[in-house]
Image (cartoon, rainbow, N blue to C red; front, side):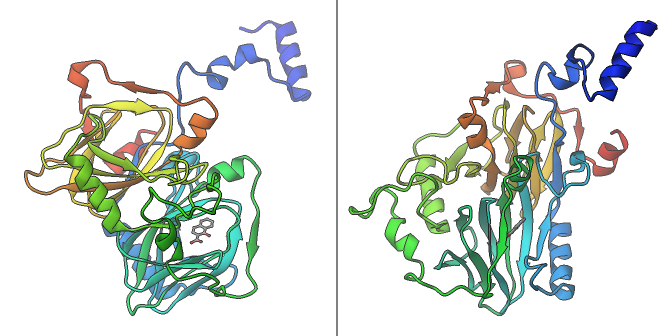
Length: 366
Ligand code: 1HN
């Protein structure tokens, strides 16, 4: 029972748009992160068929200029956000199509899933993209993409759209021409910076984002195989981060991207971080146990690990590697001094698996 003078006080506060902290402390400041983002998985069987159907029905035009299927985390109230900070999508271009030039203050990365003759032109710099290639699109850089092949080009987009929106930092502009003029040598950024450890001597190092627009799959795969001969992380197995070759830092300010190889038979230990991540299964099959729930995955699937959720990865195959690509918002947390990580200390570093993920059951219990 709340006494009348208190009730009046709180009513008067409410009328004046004031809220007393002592009545809201635990929701304003819980003892540890309580993310709205929930662990989730989108199956490739669904994603690919919906993308294909969109390719048949939806034309690209000014105003609706990207055929990108945004992944809407069911914890985030209907917004097309995969996590509280990250947008993720599967984008589909039919053979011969162009996604017209535009630019925005959101930063983007792309990871090629399939397609021949796919290209992305970023600020006049045209690069061809093949399966496994990773490409970045710095903020406010003009970009158009296309497929010069007969078949579709399919990739995963990762953008900092939710963060950008939350910060009220959104700018967007459409180009006057669909296709930018190519003003540099095709694949020039790969030729210029692609070896990583050497840079043009007369240029100042690029600090804000990586000068290398595209990281070719052949180089990534070689780095994985080389690293596997030397060492691996107990939590992520053979994991590499794409870096700005000039600074050693993540390729962009708000997002980083990893590729990790889970070798046959690997079951990693569990840890958790203050960050959020969206994973794409590039190759193989396995499972990730997130907050005690097992998410079985196979090639093409996309899943989310929210902040501060314990997770561990399993590749049960005796002979086949599994490869995961991920985007993570870690650079934001690190830059703001909010990053933490912690290994699971109990049960030999492994979680107890309480259940296997079931989408309907998960939603029914919310
Ligand atoms: C965008 O410009 C692309 O350029 C992809 O391919 C996804 C999601 C939200 C806003 C802009 C692209 C996007 C996007």
